[in-house]
Length: 124
Image (cartoon, rainbow, N blue to C red):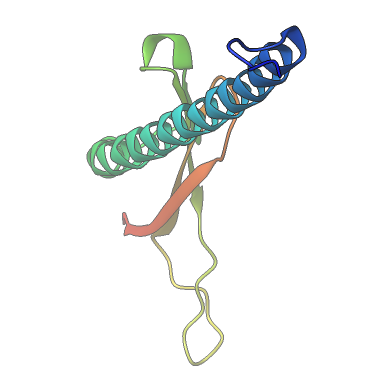
């Protein structure tokens, strides 16, 4: 009666195949986690930039109605500020004068979710 003292080639190939599938799955999961972290970082950065640009634009609005900031010079986030007169009506259906809508849109240059914010500003 022969005793089995070593792995056969077939057993080694099966073990290598299982190991390769496990490593591939781990690599895919790690890539998904890195992508999610990068996306969350870009969204947080976009929101921070929007808050900053809203505060700046309230003090110094784009008087020609539009201002763009290139993403290559702004941490990879493109910003568009628009400033237009808002048609806000009172209870008599009369347009209130001096009301302006300031809107800031931030978008990562590598693609992703646009972040928007807008505020009404009174400028007589």
